[in-house]
Image 1 (cartoon, helix red, strand yellow):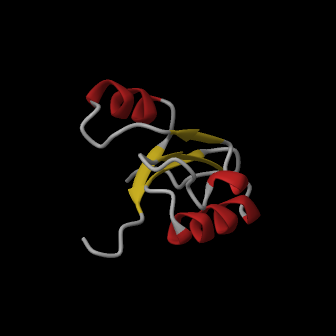
Image 2: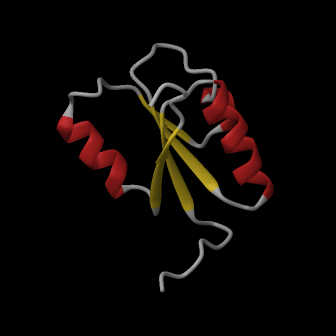
Amino acid sequence: MPEPLRPGACIGILGGGQLGRMLALAAARLGMRVHVFEPGAEPCAAPVVERVIRAGWDELAALRAFAAGVDVVTYEFENV
């Protein structure tokens, strides 16, 4: 069974909207760091996360670099 994330772990969020912001704030209270991948110019989550990668969903090199820099990846899309 995988180990649970510990304080200091980095969560990667695909999408930097309001849900990403709320997730980042909750993660910070648990001692987690958060990086966001977002193609938009001014993601709502940007002020409350450690790092924002601004790139398109089709930019595979940027997605790979994002995934390599975090411990786990999740998404924050409402319309999945």
